[in-house]
Image (tube, rainbow, N blue to C red; front, side, top):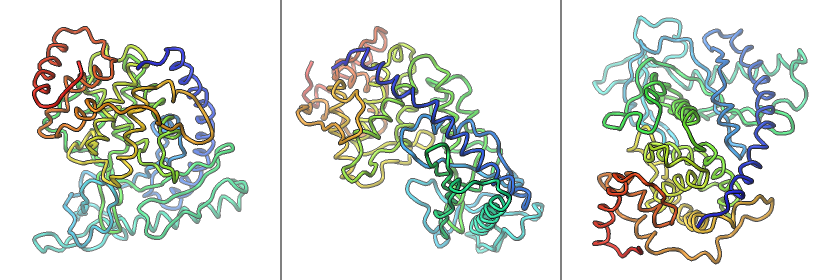
Length: 435
C-alpha cells in the first residue's frame, strides 16, 4: 500500500515551496484591509481593530485553494454583561449550513452606548427586552467600509485594482471584500463579533486534552465569540477556537500538519467534483486532523509522514462511509449535512488513494487523477459502514483495525494491540474480514 518515502517527501516539498509566497501575498492584502479598518475605527470607535492576525495567516498558508479568510471585527461592548437567550423561531432567519443554535444577546440597562444597535425582542415569557441587533451592526459596518474605501482612494492610499467591494451583499451575514495581494486576489469575509469571557459550551464528558498539550482545550475555548447568524440572531462561532487547536497541534512531535497539507493538496487537485465544486472542504479536513490527534494520542503514531497521513485517512474514510463528520467541539453537530451524492462519489476517490497513493502523489494542472482500476475492498467497506451508535466505533482500537486492514499498522504497544485484537474478535462474529 505504501508509496516510497522519497515520493511522499518530494510531494510535500512542492507544497511547502509555495508557502513563502502565500505568506507574502497575505501580508500585502492584510495591510490594505487594516488600513480600511483603521479608518472605520476612527469614524466609529465602537468597531475595534484586532491586529493579531497570526491565526488567519496560519490558516491561509495551510489551505491550497483560495477560500475566504474570516476577519473578526470586535465590538466595544461588555460581552460579559449581555444575557444569551435562545432565538425565537420567527426571528432566526437563515442561520446557514452547520451553524450552532441561534441566540439573542439581551442588552441590560447597565450596558450603555449601543442604543442605536438594539431592537425590541420578545422572550419566551412574552417579556419585551432590548437585544443587540446584528442586522443594524452589519449595516453600520458596511456603510463605514464603503466610506473608508472612498476616503482611501481620494487620499491615494489605495491603488487602482487594490480592492473591490462588488461582493458586498445586502442580506449577507458577512461583508466580503476582494483585496489584491501580489498577483492573487484574496477574499476577506469581515464579520462583527461580540466577545465574552465565558467557556465555550459543549465540552462536558469529552476526554480533555487527550492527544493535545495540557491545557490546550481550555485555552482555545476560554471565551465565546458571537457573530451574526441573521439580521435578528447571533450564533456561537468556533472559527478561532479551531484555529487555536490547530496551532497547538503544530507544536506536537511528528508531521501532523504536513499530513494536512498533503491531503489539502489532493482535495484541491483530485477530489473536486466534475463541476469544480467542493464536496470536501478545507474546514472538513481541519476537523479530521483534530479528531485524529485525539484518537491517536501516542507519538508512535506520528513518526513518519506516510503513517501520519494514514491516521487522517482512516478517520476521513469512516466519516465519508457513514456520511457523518462530527464537529470537534460540538460532536452532536454533523458537518457532512449536504448533498449525500457528493459524499458518495467522493468516497471511492479517497479509498483509491489509500490503496495506491503512488498514483496520486504528483502535481498536475489538467484533469484530476481518476481512481479507475483500483479495486474497492469489501471488507474495508463493511468495517467503515458499521453503525455509528454509542461511540462504539469511534475509538483508537477501531481505527487501529482500519490501519491494519490497509496494511499500514506498525504499532508495538502491547496494551493497544490487545485492545485491537479484542475488538477484532468481536467484529469477526458480525462481518467477514480478511486476516
